[in-house]
Image 1 (cartoon, rainbow, N blue to C red):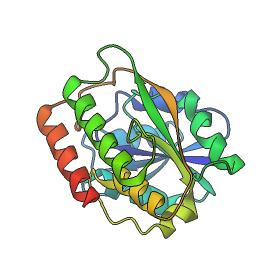
Image 2 (image 1 turned 30 degrees about the horizontal axis):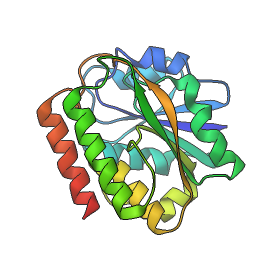
Image 3 (image 1 turned 180 degrees about the vertical axis):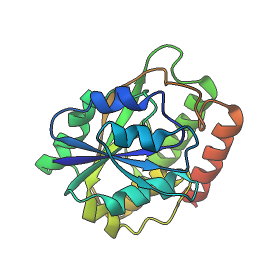
Image 4 (image 1 turned 135 degrees about the vertical axis):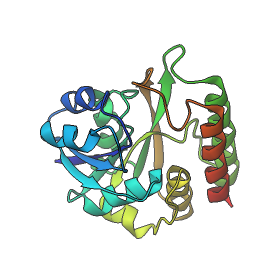
Length: 213
């Protein structure tokens, strides 16, 4: 069994589709980050295990999920309907086989699914990571997988949007084998709190730039 950690902030519209599309052998762990639309109750009613993290922050929700998970391998995936859960084995299989310690899903975006300002910001950050680490990454990766204890041992500190980048940087510093595979990226359900606005993208880029330092 593999735990899929799903950080959630007001994603009631997308939750049913995400949960029903999970492949066999993947169990959802929904981390409710102080939603006001009944996301937690909906997910629990659909059979998902739900934990709460009242402190707002993407990294805070991810870390709570990581601590709460009980399986050897864990995945992180946005729960907004933009990613296809059926593609999870593409990022988990290399971890399970031992060929990579951290796998990232690089977004292969449908037309219009990824706003230009967010795509440009991600490209800049990926370039910074390549120059700093030598890794040939094209995306910071909203779908990713690794072994739970190894991630805990990294000692990740960021609790905001710098969490994904800090994970990659710390793993690279410790000599992890890090891989990337293309995953489908489609238009999300509802409006993004991160990349749907220029302000959200700037906030995310600021957090990730802080993580780079």
